[in-house]
Length: 296
Ligand code: COA
Image 1 (cartoon, protein in one colour):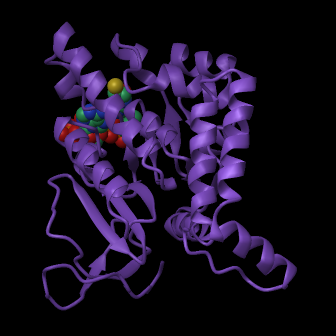
Image 2 (cartoon, helix red, strand yellow):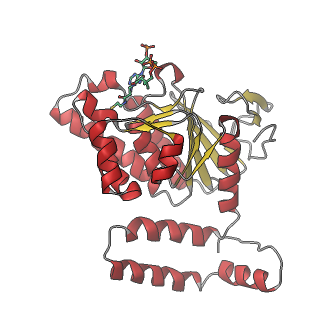
Protein backbone atom coordinates (compact mmCIF):
# COMPACT_ATOMS: atom_id res chain seq x y z
CA UNK A 1 0.00 0.00 0.00
CA UNK A 2 2.97 2.27 0.53
CA UNK A 3 3.04 5.13 -1.91
CA UNK A 4 0.29 3.43 -3.86
CA UNK A 5 -1.44 5.73 -6.28
CA UNK A 6 -5.20 5.86 -6.16
CA UNK A 7 -6.89 4.75 -9.33
CA UNK A 8 -10.40 4.92 -7.93
CA UNK A 9 -13.21 6.73 -9.64
CA UNK A 10 -13.42 10.36 -8.63
CA UNK A 11 -16.72 11.17 -6.92
CA UNK A 12 -18.84 14.27 -7.21
CA UNK A 13 -16.13 16.38 -5.58
CA UNK A 14 -13.36 17.55 -7.82
CA UNK A 15 -10.72 18.45 -5.29
CA UNK A 16 -7.17 17.65 -6.28
CA UNK A 17 -5.87 14.33 -4.94
CA UNK A 18 -4.97 14.47 -1.27
CA UNK A 19 -1.78 13.13 0.23
CA UNK A 20 -3.31 11.31 3.14
CA UNK A 21 -1.46 10.02 6.16
CA UNK A 22 -3.15 6.83 7.26
CA UNK A 23 -3.51 6.05 10.95
CA UNK A 24 -0.76 3.47 10.54
CA UNK A 25 2.20 5.74 10.42
CA UNK A 26 4.30 3.49 8.20
CA UNK A 27 1.87 3.84 5.33
CA UNK A 28 1.59 6.91 3.18
CA UNK A 29 -0.99 6.67 0.45
CA UNK A 30 -2.62 8.93 -2.04
CA UNK A 31 -6.37 9.13 -1.66
CA UNK A 32 -8.95 10.75 -3.86
CA UNK A 33 -12.26 11.47 -2.14
CA UNK A 34 -14.75 9.07 -3.69
CA UNK A 35 -18.10 9.67 -2.15
CA UNK A 36 -19.94 12.55 -0.55
CA UNK A 37 -20.95 10.20 2.26
CA UNK A 38 -18.99 10.91 5.42
CA UNK A 39 -19.00 9.20 8.75
CA UNK A 40 -18.49 10.73 12.18
CA UNK A 41 -16.40 7.87 13.48
CA UNK A 42 -14.99 6.13 10.42
CA UNK A 43 -12.57 6.81 7.62
CA UNK A 44 -13.84 5.25 4.42
CA UNK A 45 -11.44 5.15 1.48
CA UNK A 46 -12.14 3.38 -1.78
CA UNK A 47 -9.08 2.50 -3.85
CA UNK A 48 -9.12 0.28 -6.86
CA UNK A 49 -12.14 -1.69 -5.70
CA UNK A 50 -11.07 -2.06 -2.07
CA UNK A 51 -12.85 -0.15 0.70
CA UNK A 52 -10.47 0.54 3.58
CA UNK A 53 -12.67 1.22 6.61
CA UNK A 54 -10.85 2.59 9.66
CA UNK A 55 -12.63 2.92 12.99
CA UNK A 56 -11.42 6.30 14.09
CA UNK A 57 -11.66 6.92 17.85
CA UNK A 58 -8.05 6.31 18.82
CA UNK A 59 -8.35 8.32 22.06
CA UNK A 60 -10.92 5.74 23.25
CA UNK A 61 -9.07 2.81 21.68
CA UNK A 62 -11.73 2.75 18.93
CA UNK A 63 -14.41 1.52 21.37
CA UNK A 64 -17.73 0.81 19.67
CA UNK A 65 -20.14 3.45 20.91
CA UNK A 66 -23.62 3.74 19.38
CA UNK A 67 -22.38 6.15 16.72
CA UNK A 68 -19.63 3.78 15.58
CA UNK A 69 -22.13 0.93 15.33
CA UNK A 70 -24.49 3.15 13.32
CA UNK A 71 -21.68 4.31 11.01
CA UNK A 72 -20.46 0.74 10.54
CA UNK A 73 -24.00 -0.39 9.74
CA UNK A 74 -24.24 2.28 7.03
CA UNK A 75 -20.81 1.35 5.71
CA UNK A 76 -21.80 -2.33 5.53
CA UNK A 77 -24.93 -1.44 3.53
CA UNK A 78 -22.82 0.61 1.17
CA UNK A 79 -20.35 -2.24 0.70
CA UNK A 80 -23.19 -4.63 -0.12
CA UNK A 81 -24.89 -2.19 -2.50
CA UNK A 82 -22.09 -0.58 -4.52
CA UNK A 83 -20.72 -2.56 -7.44
CA UNK A 84 -17.47 -0.59 -7.41
CA UNK A 85 -16.64 -2.08 -4.01
CA UNK A 86 -15.19 -5.55 -4.51
CA UNK A 87 -13.76 -6.19 -1.06
CA UNK A 88 -13.14 -4.60 2.34
CA UNK A 89 -10.33 -4.15 4.84
CA UNK A 90 -11.45 -3.22 8.34
CA UNK A 91 -8.92 -1.77 10.77
CA UNK A 92 -8.56 0.58 13.73
CA UNK A 93 -6.91 3.99 13.93
CA UNK A 94 -3.67 4.39 15.85
CA UNK A 95 -1.00 1.93 16.89
CA UNK A 96 -2.67 0.60 20.02
CA UNK A 97 -6.09 -0.80 19.27
CA UNK A 98 -8.18 -2.42 16.60
CA UNK A 99 -11.25 -2.03 18.84
CA UNK A 100 -11.09 -2.29 22.65
CA UNK A 101 -14.71 -3.40 22.92
CA UNK A 102 -18.15 -1.93 23.16
CA UNK A 103 -18.06 1.53 24.73
CA UNK A 104 -18.24 0.86 28.45
CA UNK A 105 -19.61 4.37 29.14
CA UNK A 106 -22.63 3.55 26.92
CA UNK A 107 -23.11 0.15 28.55
CA UNK A 108 -23.09 1.75 31.98
CA UNK A 109 -26.30 3.63 31.13
CA UNK A 110 -28.34 0.72 29.78
CA UNK A 111 -31.31 -1.13 31.21
CA UNK A 112 -32.56 -4.58 30.13
CA UNK A 113 -34.55 -3.48 27.10
CA UNK A 114 -32.10 -1.01 25.61
CA UNK A 115 -29.31 -3.49 26.43
CA UNK A 116 -31.04 -6.11 24.31
CA UNK A 117 -31.75 -3.57 21.55
CA UNK A 118 -28.08 -2.52 21.56
CA UNK A 119 -26.96 -6.16 21.24
CA UNK A 120 -29.37 -6.72 18.35
CA UNK A 121 -28.16 -3.58 16.55
CA UNK A 122 -24.52 -4.60 16.93
CA UNK A 123 -25.26 -8.17 15.84
CA UNK A 124 -27.18 -6.99 12.76
CA UNK A 125 -24.32 -4.70 11.74
CA UNK A 126 -21.78 -7.52 12.04
CA UNK A 127 -24.03 -9.91 10.18
CA UNK A 128 -24.36 -7.38 7.34
CA UNK A 129 -20.60 -7.38 6.84
CA UNK A 130 -20.53 -11.17 7.11
CA UNK A 131 -23.23 -11.58 4.43
CA UNK A 132 -22.35 -8.63 2.18
CA UNK A 133 -21.26 -11.04 -0.56
CA UNK A 134 -17.76 -9.57 -0.80
CA UNK A 135 -14.63 -10.67 1.05
CA UNK A 136 -13.99 -8.72 4.26
CA UNK A 137 -10.53 -8.87 5.86
CA UNK A 138 -9.85 -7.64 9.41
CA UNK A 139 -6.40 -6.01 9.76
CA UNK A 140 -6.02 -6.25 13.53
CA UNK A 141 -3.52 -3.65 14.63
CA UNK A 142 -3.75 -3.88 18.43
CA UNK A 143 -6.30 -4.72 21.13
CA UNK A 144 -9.28 -6.68 19.79
CA UNK A 145 -11.31 -7.10 22.95
CA UNK A 146 -14.98 -7.84 23.50
CA UNK A 147 -16.83 -6.21 20.60
CA UNK A 148 -13.48 -5.79 18.84
CA UNK A 149 -12.84 -9.53 18.86
CA UNK A 150 -16.47 -10.00 17.80
CA UNK A 151 -16.05 -7.55 14.91
CA UNK A 152 -12.91 -9.36 13.78
CA UNK A 153 -14.71 -12.71 13.95
CA UNK A 154 -17.51 -11.46 11.69
CA UNK A 155 -14.90 -10.73 9.01
CA UNK A 156 -14.05 -13.54 6.62
CA UNK A 157 -10.29 -13.42 7.25
CA UNK A 158 -8.25 -12.06 10.15
CA UNK A 159 -4.69 -10.83 9.77
CA UNK A 160 -3.08 -9.67 13.00
CA UNK A 161 -0.06 -7.57 13.76
CA UNK A 162 2.43 -9.09 16.21
CA UNK A 163 1.23 -6.48 18.72
CA UNK A 164 -2.43 -7.53 18.61
CA UNK A 165 -4.15 -8.83 21.75
CA UNK A 166 -7.42 -10.73 21.84
CA UNK A 167 -10.01 -11.45 24.49
CA UNK A 168 -13.64 -11.59 25.53
CA UNK A 169 -13.32 -9.85 28.91
CA UNK A 170 -17.05 -9.10 29.34
CA UNK A 171 -17.55 -11.33 32.39
CA UNK A 172 -15.09 -9.13 34.28
CA UNK A 173 -17.65 -6.35 33.86
CA UNK A 174 -20.62 -8.48 34.87
CA UNK A 175 -21.85 -8.85 31.30
CA UNK A 176 -21.52 -11.57 28.69
CA UNK A 177 -20.54 -11.13 25.04
CA UNK A 178 -23.41 -9.48 23.16
CA UNK A 179 -22.19 -9.02 19.58
CA UNK A 180 -21.96 -12.68 18.64
CA UNK A 181 -18.97 -13.78 20.73
CA UNK A 182 -20.74 -16.74 22.31
CA UNK A 183 -21.72 -17.97 18.86
CA UNK A 184 -18.85 -17.18 16.48
CA UNK A 185 -15.96 -17.91 18.87
CA UNK A 186 -16.92 -21.60 19.40
CA UNK A 187 -17.55 -21.95 15.66
CA UNK A 188 -14.05 -20.63 14.94
CA UNK A 189 -11.91 -22.18 17.66
CA UNK A 190 -14.10 -24.93 19.16
CA UNK A 191 -16.18 -24.99 22.31
CA UNK A 192 -13.34 -25.69 24.75
CA UNK A 193 -11.07 -22.83 23.65
CA UNK A 194 -14.06 -20.49 23.36
CA UNK A 195 -15.33 -21.24 26.84
CA UNK A 196 -11.84 -20.75 28.24
CA UNK A 197 -11.61 -17.25 26.76
CA UNK A 198 -15.19 -16.28 27.58
CA UNK A 199 -15.20 -17.58 31.16
CA UNK A 200 -11.73 -16.40 32.20
CA UNK A 201 -11.74 -13.09 30.32
CA UNK A 202 -8.04 -13.78 29.73
CA UNK A 203 -6.20 -11.86 27.03
CA UNK A 204 -4.09 -13.78 24.52
CA UNK A 205 -1.39 -12.54 22.17
CA UNK A 206 -1.39 -12.79 18.40
CA UNK A 207 0.67 -15.98 18.25
CA UNK A 208 -1.67 -17.76 20.63
CA UNK A 209 -4.64 -16.48 18.61
CA UNK A 210 -2.99 -17.95 15.53
CA UNK A 211 -2.33 -21.24 17.34
CA UNK A 212 -5.99 -21.71 18.30
CA UNK A 213 -7.28 -20.64 14.87
CA UNK A 214 -8.69 -17.27 15.85
CA UNK A 215 -6.52 -15.48 13.27
CA UNK A 216 -5.23 -16.62 9.91
CA UNK A 217 -1.88 -14.89 9.86
CA UNK A 218 0.43 -12.83 12.11
CA UNK A 219 2.75 -10.21 10.59
CA UNK A 220 4.97 -7.37 11.82
CA UNK A 221 2.95 -4.22 12.52
CA UNK A 222 4.56 -2.31 9.66
CA UNK A 223 3.43 -4.96 7.18
CA UNK A 224 -0.15 -5.31 8.39
CA UNK A 225 -2.10 -3.24 5.88
CA UNK A 226 0.10 -4.24 2.96
CA UNK A 227 -0.41 -7.93 3.83
CA UNK A 228 -4.16 -7.45 4.20
CA UNK A 229 -4.30 -5.67 0.85
CA UNK A 230 -2.14 -8.27 -0.90
CA UNK A 231 -4.29 -11.08 0.48
CA UNK A 232 -7.49 -9.34 -0.56
CA UNK A 233 -6.19 -8.46 -4.02
CA UNK A 234 -5.26 -12.12 -4.45
CA UNK A 235 -8.86 -13.09 -3.67
CA UNK A 236 -10.20 -10.40 -5.98
CA UNK A 237 -8.16 -11.86 -8.83
CA UNK A 238 -10.16 -15.11 -8.54
CA UNK A 239 -13.52 -15.72 -10.16
CA UNK A 240 -15.78 -13.31 -8.28
CA UNK A 241 -18.90 -15.47 -8.63
CA UNK A 242 -17.00 -18.46 -7.30
CA UNK A 243 -15.74 -16.43 -4.33
CA UNK A 244 -19.23 -15.16 -3.59
CA UNK A 245 -20.83 -18.60 -3.70
CA UNK A 246 -18.02 -20.14 -1.64
CA UNK A 247 -18.60 -17.48 1.05
CA UNK A 248 -22.32 -18.21 0.97
CA UNK A 249 -21.89 -22.00 1.09
CA UNK A 250 -19.60 -21.83 4.14
CA UNK A 251 -21.80 -19.28 5.92
CA UNK A 252 -25.09 -21.08 5.31
CA UNK A 253 -23.69 -24.60 5.36
CA UNK A 254 -22.54 -24.23 8.97
CA UNK A 255 -26.19 -23.92 10.00
CA UNK A 256 -27.33 -26.97 8.01
CA UNK A 257 -27.07 -30.72 8.34
CA UNK A 258 -24.19 -32.22 6.38
CA UNK A 259 -26.56 -33.52 3.69
CA UNK A 260 -28.24 -30.13 3.29
CA UNK A 261 -24.87 -28.40 3.13
CA UNK A 262 -23.58 -30.84 0.53
CA UNK A 263 -26.69 -30.26 -1.59
CA UNK A 264 -26.18 -26.49 -1.35
CA UNK A 265 -22.58 -26.98 -2.44
CA UNK A 266 -23.60 -29.15 -5.39
CA UNK A 267 -26.19 -26.55 -6.43
CA UNK A 268 -23.53 -23.82 -6.35
CA UNK A 269 -21.15 -26.05 -8.28
CA UNK A 270 -23.79 -26.58 -10.95
CA UNK A 271 -24.70 -22.90 -11.04
CA UNK A 272 -21.07 -21.93 -11.61
CA UNK A 273 -20.90 -24.38 -14.53
CA UNK A 274 -23.36 -22.07 -16.29
CA UNK A 275 -21.04 -19.06 -16.03
CA UNK A 276 -18.63 -17.62 -18.55
CA UNK A 277 -16.13 -17.30 -15.70
CA UNK A 278 -15.97 -21.06 -15.20
CA UNK A 279 -15.29 -21.61 -18.89
CA UNK A 280 -12.68 -18.86 -18.84
CA UNK A 281 -10.95 -20.22 -15.71
CA UNK A 282 -10.72 -23.78 -17.02
CA UNK A 283 -9.77 -22.74 -20.55
CA UNK A 284 -7.10 -20.37 -19.27
CA UNK A 285 -5.56 -23.20 -17.24
CA UNK A 286 -5.50 -25.51 -20.24
CA UNK A 287 -4.10 -22.71 -22.44
CA UNK A 288 -1.44 -21.99 -19.80
CA UNK A 289 -2.42 -18.33 -19.45
CA UNK A 290 -3.87 -16.13 -16.72
CA UNK A 291 -7.68 -16.05 -16.62
CA UNK A 292 -9.66 -12.88 -17.29
CA UNK A 293 -12.76 -13.13 -15.13
CA UNK A 294 -15.74 -10.87 -15.80
CA UNK A 295 -18.10 -11.86 -13.01
CA UNK A 296 -20.58 -13.39 -15.49
N1 COA B 1 -15.03 1.63 26.30
C1 COA B 1 -14.86 2.92 26.54
N2 COA B 1 -13.67 3.50 26.69
C2 COA B 1 -12.58 2.71 26.58
C3 COA B 1 -12.67 1.34 26.35
C4 COA B 1 -13.97 0.79 26.18
N3 COA B 1 -14.17 -0.51 25.92
N4 COA B 1 -11.43 0.82 26.31
C5 COA B 1 -10.57 1.84 26.52
N5 COA B 1 -11.28 2.98 26.68
C6 COA B 1 -10.76 4.31 26.95
C7 COA B 1 -10.27 4.48 28.37
O1 COA B 1 -11.34 4.76 29.24
C8 COA B 1 -9.31 5.63 28.20
O2 COA B 1 -10.06 6.83 28.10
P1 COA B 1 -9.57 8.16 28.93
O3 COA B 1 -8.20 8.44 28.38
O4 COA B 1 -10.59 9.18 28.55
O5 COA B 1 -9.57 7.75 30.35
C9 COA B 1 -8.69 5.38 26.85
O6 COA B 1 -9.60 4.52 26.15
C10 COA B 1 -7.36 4.67 26.91
O7 COA B 1 -7.52 3.47 27.63
P2 COA B 1 -6.62 3.07 28.90
O8 COA B 1 -7.40 2.12 29.74
O9 COA B 1 -6.11 4.31 29.56
O10 COA B 1 -5.42 2.35 28.15
P3 COA B 1 -4.46 1.23 28.79
O11 COA B 1 -3.34 1.06 27.83
O12 COA B 1 -4.12 1.51 30.19
O13 COA B 1 -5.35 -0.13 28.79
C11 COA B 1 -6.89 -1.71 27.85
C12 COA B 1 -5.79 -0.68 27.58
C13 COA B 1 -7.45 -2.19 26.52
C14 COA B 1 -6.29 -2.93 28.60
C15 COA B 1 -7.99 -1.08 28.71
O14 COA B 1 -8.38 0.14 28.11
C16 COA B 1 -9.22 -1.92 28.86
O15 COA B 1 -9.22 -2.87 29.63
N6 COA B 1 -10.31 -1.55 28.17
C17 COA B 1 -11.58 -2.20 28.28
C18 COA B 1 -11.57 -3.54 27.56
C19 COA B 1 -12.90 -4.26 27.73
O16 COA B 1 -13.28 -4.64 28.79
N7 COA B 1 -13.62 -4.43 26.60
C20 COA B 1 -14.88 -5.09 26.58
C21 COA B 1 -15.97 -4.13 26.79
S1 COA B 1 -17.56 -4.95 26.77
